[in-house]
Length: 210
Ligand code: ADP
Ligand code: ZN
Image (cartoon, rainbow, N blue to C red; front, side, top):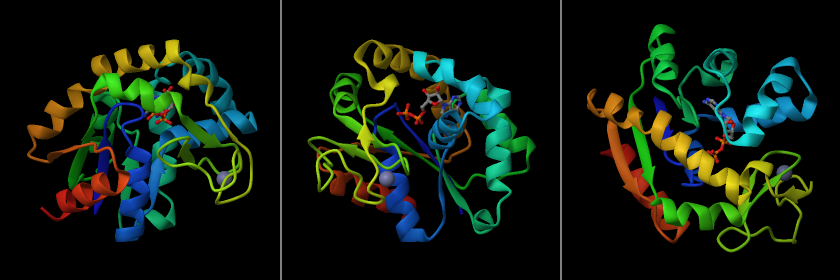
């Protein structure tokens, strides 16, 4: 089963990707996490991606398409995968088609823009393993320390308020057209993001079975 999670930055794609991963036993692949890791390690691809990411712009299609292709070629993807943050443009979606990948379902998590800003301002991310937290909605057990790996949790540079507005603009211009792309193929289901994470998770798992 090959799945895509669509939605604005901060809509909760990463959290739901984890839920589906646990329920279905297929890996969740976040291009954002892979890119942040590449930036941290100073790889050539990370060096190219850094400035785009910090300004809230998209990393060029050819870079992320290359990354994604390498990732889904790995062994753990042979029974399927969940894509979180890819595709983000119509050419990226077309690239999946060209790779011969069939997408079974696309779940859009919808959260209105005005809520997004509030969510992103409280978001924290682990420097070590990339896990996401939120100061109000999903706090770490010990303040500032990742539950999973014990590394420090920090504010992402691109979660600063001005950059968040740019990212939302990019989302509406470049990524939102994918709703029509997949709905024309009869693959799109929209889940309305709820206040409680567990409610969104229930709706997401229901959408998968539908
Ligand atoms: P969010 O979903 O909160 O926006 P991500 O972690 O998915 O955050 O992505 C962070 C940044 O990484 C994006 O703003 C963008 O610069 C880059 N990025 C991630 N995935 C892609 C992609 N598929 N295409 C282009 N850029 C990407
Ligand atoms: Zn961690």
